[in-house]
Length: 152
Image (cartoon, rainbow, N blue to C red; front, side):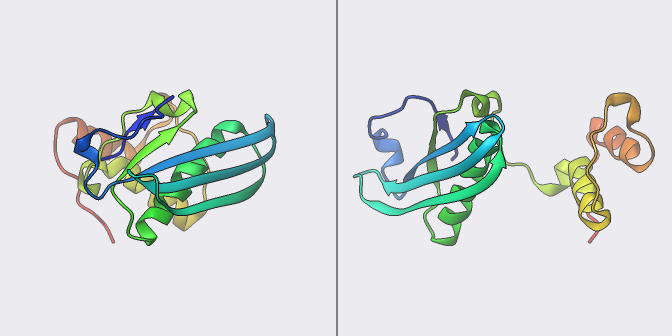
């Protein structure tokens, strides 16, 4: 279970005491953009620190730093067998989304775009009027509830 909590300072309720780790992540940008770095502490519900990290990012924005610290913290937690987590962040920009798991078959359009970006090394932003071709077809099927067949 992944939860973003602002200003959360007490230990989680008993529901989260099983094997969950508490992960506090912070990103910083000295200017916006400016020199940026991230840090995090992953500890258990009793306060025992499993690991701490800090990473210099070079130049970036505060939103980039906050997103990167959660991503790197989750990556480290998975690598070290410390999942699931309760994630604490102090950036309200990260609270604009409710993070939920979906299978790749239910996320065909994003899967298609990610594979295309990786294979062609593309960076693009599509607005509604820009969506054509294969992507348009995948989105049309998705809107009708037809699962996307994965290409490998």
